[in-house]
Length: 280
Image (cartoon, rainbow, N blue to C red; front, side):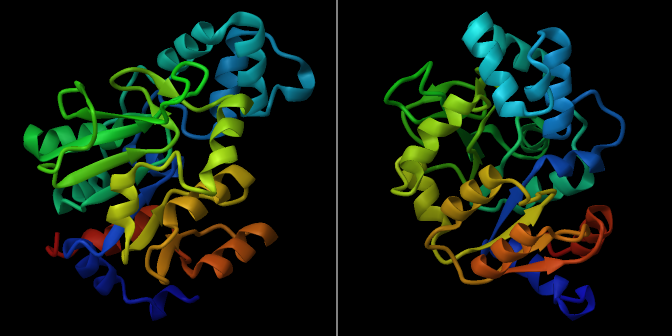
């Protein structure tokens, strides 16, 4: 759809009125200026395989390379490498900071970096928000997620007092180095995700009736489509994705099936248009 026909001011108003769930992908890091954080799966994979040799045929496949490292060098080695890869935190962009200020009840972050976490720490009282992260079954068998308050202390479940819940469905660097990254990590989750078991009850509650706004996301991979599809379940029928690249055949099909309207402009331009108003 032509971006001129999309009411960006309405999207901003809906964000400010808690009717939209921001859904961040690794592409959001492109707004943060120079940083040392892996910003795509291929870049992360290249970093891991520079540290540990893996067979040539899987050297560019993140989940398979991670599985090889886990199998032959132990899970602790994989977690250590991931912690080192994401040790730096990119300075939050104007988009991250605006999303933190708008106090959306739910924000979904689908990369391992702590940039959105840093934005919340910059602009919000500690009692006002918290996060919930996915857990790998190889380390926490039978427990799918862990909630943490703003100080990084584990709590039994998201607190009712939190105005914003940051949901990290593939884990994250802080505070405990929880990662879904290897083939076996994702197989465990995908086995159960259709019946929603790995998705926290609070997330399921907060998504009801709300639209999703995808920022820095691609859907050219089966995993990203599967996670987005299940996280969106039972939400609104209308969503948006800032996607300047021409979608692949499978991406286009996914967008159509899920009622996601494509905003055909670069993320930086869309961010400026979305947040140049004082609505949030």
